[in-house]
Length: 80
Image 1 (cartoon, rainbow, N blue to C red):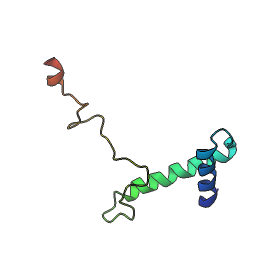
Image 2: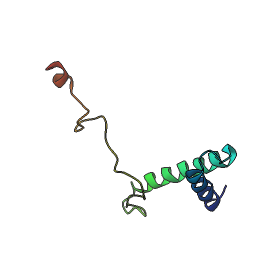
Image 3: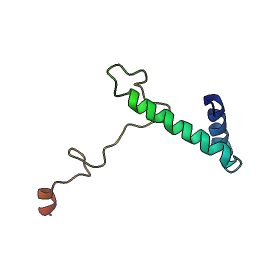
Image 4: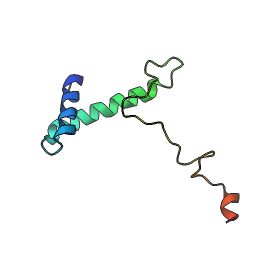
């Protein structure tokens, strides 16, 4: 599937979600996934081509790990 056709199929799905044939949607979605993987990888380069957020994209939220409000160390848990 080429990029223009994938965009067309995905846009059609956004307007008519129940009318799009799965055989059109799945290849378009797979292409979109691979494109997003490439954007993510590109952003790690010293001079990324795409550094701005995409339309509709939100900032990444860290839901676990140090510094996250959802993360608690063993000591913090034991204090409860």
